[in-house]
Image (spheres, rainbow, N blue to C red):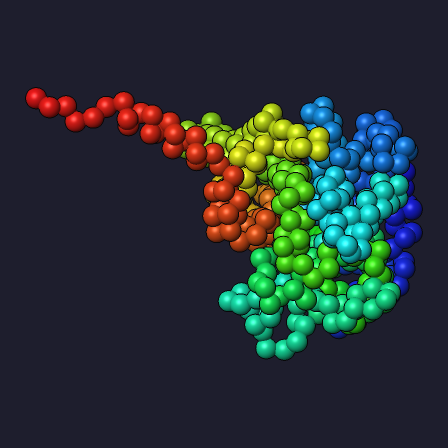
Length: 485
């Protein structure tokens, strides 16, 4: 299996990444990307290490592959997949939101149902999906995706916008493939990925067929540019002052296609507004992919809970009833997400092809509360740290300078907790709740699976068994009536 060193070596491939108006020559040599690239490399090393139990023999290739990319064909395989995902999530403590197992999971679900991509009398796009899935397994690839239109207007779809091909769409069909022009968001990790899957998960109208595409391209494809949001790593003065920012600041990119030729063998969906939706929901990709996301989210919440608990210990307030109440609420929130992950696994069922999928009710129920749970978790941590995160040394240099170190050691400490340990803990807490990295993560978790009203009003609502609830209500209310005296 590909190692971390091999992954890092592959990044110098001529990809067009633009930051501050300039093209990045090599992401591995750029301060905005090198630290998080090394974090991704560590994940590949974990998978390549047989002792971690992340490998299996893939039936599609007959060779060792990464379990996080596997198609679960039994309940045991679904459990094994969850444990492999947890191995990666625990290594990053859940702070890499689009690690390679996220989009890799979507690719696995696509390959489990190639018939969804087949077009009668047309090109065999199902074969394309299967072929690229085998490549994913064999090469242990990092695939990112951009599946949301740019925010030109949310009142209309792309066909109603002023200006042609602002959203990624087909401008011409050729014998070699599709000529693509336009932009798409939000390619988290795109600057560090091997390939990028581009499509549209937002519902499209009948006039939007040119934008109803699905395809996968190498990150260094000529004509593909990535405009990356402001990176936070360069502003992190040290790993001591910004322990999360300096390791886990994964880039988010706006993709721009300047008449990019996508070969036919890389096309999954060709101008089909029905099939572009089916690829996500009829294959099980949305279910399995978001289960991976909830496993990662639960791991992250558990980490934040650990920080909150340690803060109360260091401050000596963990015996106060009101503090224990807050810790109890925090525990309830984290436990609810962890329990939903396991409940979805427990209620999993195989579809008609033998592809095992987590229970939708538990999964989407948890997703529906994510936009409320994360801000509340952060609010509890803010309450518990209080002013402690504001009265911190300006940087780690205050702990090492002869001018300041004696005062810091004397005045910024707690009983049994030396200054270095206390400062380290509260710097970590600030990186969670107050840094630009922390602010980005709050926004990120709010909209992880889409706008909250969509997640609740579509996914959570439609996947809850209200029919059974109504039937039981009807059974009860029909058991009594108005009695005449």
